[in-house]
Length: 491
Image (cartoon, rainbow, N blue to C red; front, side):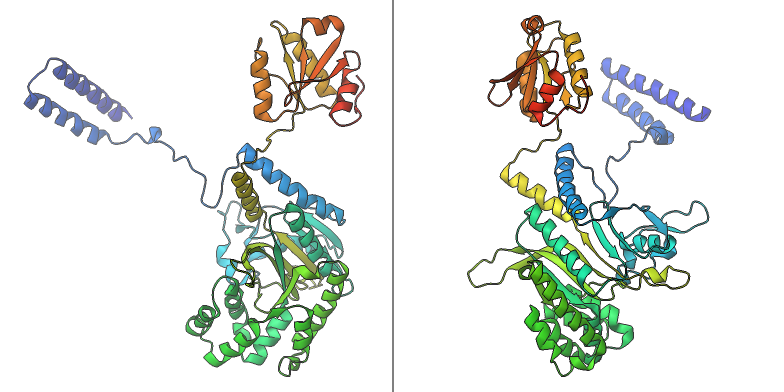
């Protein structure tokens, strides 16, 4: 430290010498010589690590949310959570990280996307990759065999032994309700069954060891062509071309319950007990979906594979549809916004005695939905309120800060969302402009005359017209009634 301080002093003195020579208009040669000495001293000094600038950015994969963005996000969350509650779900929460061993071996090829944390206390930890595996661990730890839960505004699950396809149908109904309520565009829910996939792979000649990796390739059919998928299966994963062709004959089919019935009669597929069970359940599922009035939103799609290892039965994925360019063309999928399925074996993987708890659930892609809603609002140039303030307490004359503070406090105590400007003598025009910018609908104005008369004037910010003159003694109850309901407090 002492050596650095001495060097800093030399740099300071040399800098002063260079400035002095320049002021004296010394020869260019002399100035150049002294500048070279200064640069040499600075090089010896090096950078001061304690004064290094921080790089102002968020970590990769994260982002900040502005007040406007959070207002949009909360509205999306509110729609989702209200739907979950309408269907009788309880809320739980689990940690954002788990023991690494809890997460490993559950996600197939996606396991490489799990982020590990530094070992703090002798345990290897990882950030949770989804909310399903932590939920299964929670059920096993707490010995629960029956629960309907939601987590944040993303996941909804039904755990328990129930008759086939009733909980599955409700999950699809919830998915359709949420996507319809959010009004983000036309959508389609693709449905398949892992038992059908496994049976199909078996009769096509795929070895058991390649089931999951071939699933992962097939699942890309919504993004790339069949030829690209086939090339990956044959070139990268070692599948025989004739086996890939047999798979292609199946996975390029999609339709409704008629396709289910057609495949039930398929001479090859009917040789697989697994596939027949899956097809039988899908036929029953379509009956319930028809009763729920959503069968027109559902498509049985044999290309849907969902790469996660823990799925055991019905799987589904909702995609937004792009309007066709020409009449007669089919709508194009523009991205998954929700997904889920049945995972009957996951809880048993954590239970010491291997006891299974059948589960089915769904996950809403809130980040993608939020981006879509945000883009739509920007395109329409819609203004988004970032606060819920109902009324601004304002004054028309000077020296009324005390009265404004008294009034705003009484309104807060009455349960009214209220604000005031943090100035002693704000201009009325500035107060009204603040209301317009913040979207505050009403302004409560007090002045000398209002104080004498014992009243408060309520003015509409939009029309600038007086809405009501409220008596001072019962302003809490009366103003609260004007703003939306009975006052919850005595005033």
